[in-house]
Image (cartoon, rainbow, N blue to C red; front, side, top):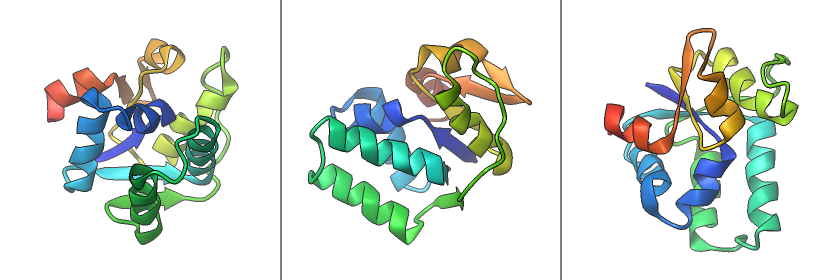
Length: 133
C-alpha cells in the first residue's frame, strides 16, 4: 500500500497518539510512504519553526528519508489545483497522483473536506488505523 502523509501527521507524531502509530506502521514496512520535494521541504521547515529540530525523532525521520526506507519519491510533481481554500495543500494530492498512492492521511480540515480526489481517499489518522492498522 502506498500512502501520502500530511505534514501535521509527522509533526503530531512527535507527541504520540494516533499519528505516532501511523508513523510506526510506516517504519515497520506496513505501507510505503510517498514523498515529494515540496512535502519534505514543508516537513523540515515546520519542524524547525516549532523548535523540534535536533530531536532524535527528527534525526530518525531524516535518516529514513535519506535511505529511502519504504519510501517512494517524486522530486517535482505536476501542479494540480485541488484545495482552493489552501493551495499549499495541493502538494499532497500532487504527490498522491504522481506516485499512484492508495490514500492520503491528514488531520488538516481542508484535505479532509476534499474527502477523495481522483479515487484517492483522505483519512484521518484514527480512521486510517481502524482500516489498516
